[in-house]
Amino acid sequence: MKNCRHKWLITYDDSEYIRSLFSFANIVSWNLTYGMRNITETSDQNGKELFISNFLTNTPQQLELF
Image 1: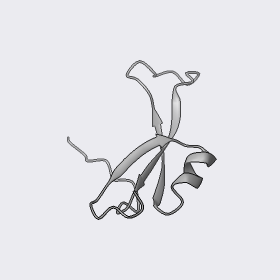
Image 2 (image 1 turned 60 degrees about the horizontal axis):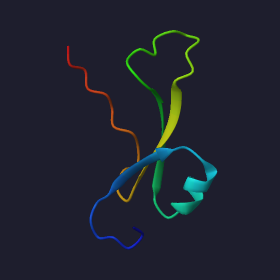
Image 3 (image 1 turned 90 degrees about the vertical axis):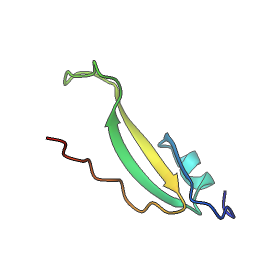
Image 4 (image 1 turned 90 degrees about the horizontal axis):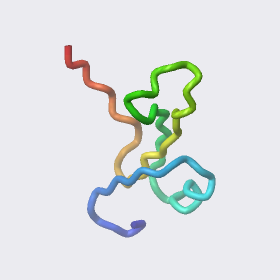
C-alpha cells in the first residue's frame, strides 16, 4: 500500500495497532452510529472508525438533501 500509485481508501475500527500499521498514510477518525435501530441515548452501538488513505485528509462533509 505504501508504494501504490493509485488512490486507495480503506476503513478499520480505530485501534493503536491499526494506526501503527498505517502510520505512513493519512488517517482520519470518524465517529458513527451502527444500525438503523440504534436511536436511544443508552444504546451502545456507537463506533469509532478510521479512514485510511493516500489522498484523503479529512472526512467528507454530509450533503444536505432537503
